[in-house]
Image 1: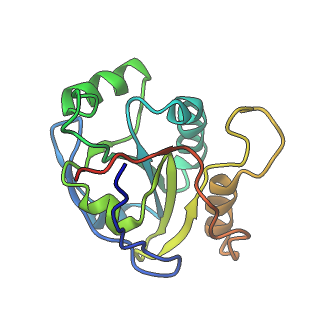
Image 2: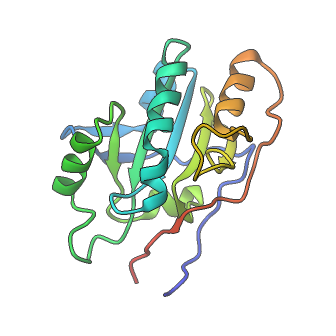
Length: 184
């Protein structure tokens, strides 16, 4: 496996803007979301990652819990598209339909956006405030195998703190999941 360098946007820095196609056949721009929402959660996803499958219900729950407060979740798939078509836009559409995803699922076919964010694993969470500042990056929580377990719900806690105007208690964690497959 080849490891490629990422830009690794740091917490407190500006999140990279993007213009990516979605499974809805529309082009999605981060700047448009920032103009319409108080916070945007970007999650590095892919169709075949067992960790992503462990988190899908939790991600849908987070979207539901905070939507009325002005939060939107966006999934971005950047896994290598030159392989057996696991990451084609058609496969992404089928995946989203099979798992009843109710948030945008975008295709980063060049992998540039994911590199700019510093994504290394799936799933990996990035929380962006309405000014485009990255406020949290890392794990969704620290209990991937136990959805109902008591533990640290990093992303949920970061969103709640952001909406309350409080300091985010843990602004960065080491991501856990499947390594992104980079194109060489």
